[in-house]
Image (cartoon, rainbow, N blue to C red; front, side, top):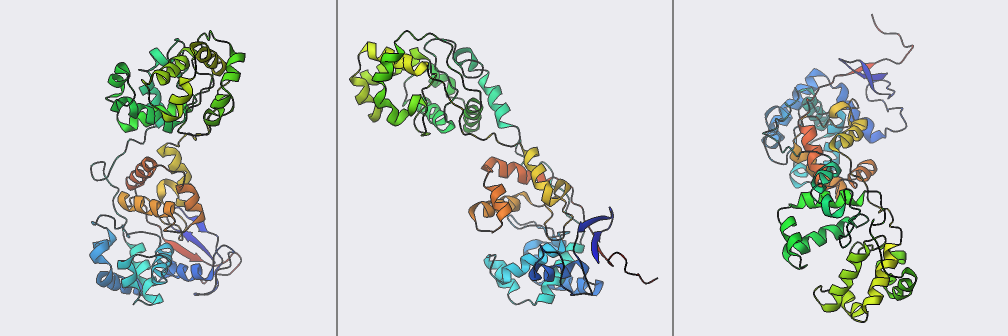
Length: 410
């Protein structure tokens, strides 16, 4: 037989069935998962018994009718039956560990777990969260947000961070971590510049991170400013700089800036500041002290002539793009049609955040989920969880049908 879900009458999973309790024929369904699928076709009597067990064992945490009102505890109403059955068994077998759950399910039989799973799957789904009830991160594109914030910087540093004014540094090709650290240094007064301190004082952490990302993703190019020194002489004088700033001024260390293509006047003024001690850095103050004005001009000219390189920085996905990826397995708007894959729609956002974090840390095991969640930032997790909490949940009914060609009773 095949399992279909009613309403849309679309195949949920192509799993072969014989008589009740027979092993699934699909290669991707293990015997353990086949046992979990028994919850899909529980009888009304078994569902009612599952309700009695759930009322006695589960309702205190998961709420009446499977709708949780407890922080960090998921809704179970209308969750996919086979998925619930599989997870309940995982708690009992300690492949998933949570003290409260393990303590409850250890005393329940396979049949009891199956009936509880079938009962919760039979319930009406929870309502979607309202904007006021759940966290509602903006989910906006951080690159676009960074571009908007960078409009105030363009007059000095260039529209895309490529300087056109001598003495003003280019901001492209700077590792985001270095950019953020530099802004923090201006804010704290560790780096002395009254104008910069006043300009960055009102920037919150999110805006600084967005600025850093925007500039890091721009097409790198040399500063459009003159370089009066001798690049050939500067190459020789800069030989010792490569250990920190990389070959041709392209750094491989987020803590050390790339200087390839940087404005020459800015580089020369920076070396002077290290030489006179107005900028402090143990690795720079000593080497700069040995340089005369000519050598500083030549080094600056050499690095200004080098081609800056793109950074290995990933453009983050928007919430909509993350959701599109998740929907491939979890169904349209988080409404799974596979009984073994959980519904995300209308789930509590705090629970979804916990679940994603568990996959990120390895506390929960799934190759696909670990690979997906490892790319997410904290903001991604928060925004995606809130997105699914606000989606309308849809219940499904799985119907056991005979295989093609098998006669049905009339």
